[in-house]
Length: 107
Image (cartoon, rainbow, N blue to C red; front, side, top):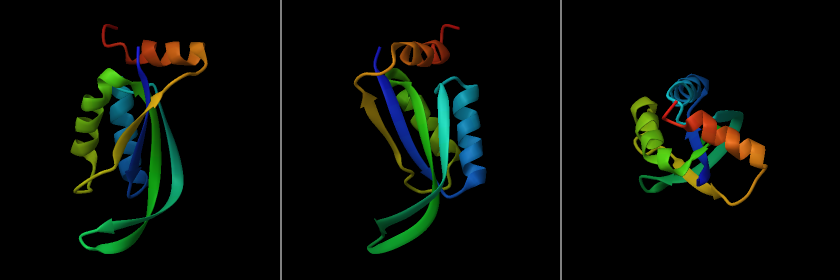
């Protein structure tokens, strides 16, 4: 089983809540942590922009990532939302089993 952590930025609380709820209800992730105040600076359409955003940190399994991307895109107002995953190389065995159990589509 390959485990991942996903970072998703959003423009605010309303979008974060909708995305978190959809990912959880569909058992695509086991957990979503929301960091409510992130200051982002980035290039967009030829200029540097700055935004106040929220950061969602989600825990899941690699074979769910494409479905996660689809759900986020359907519920996100950005033209190009940040949806990136990082492999979890090691962790608390009980926690990793919990992620697997929650995201197991056979249940």
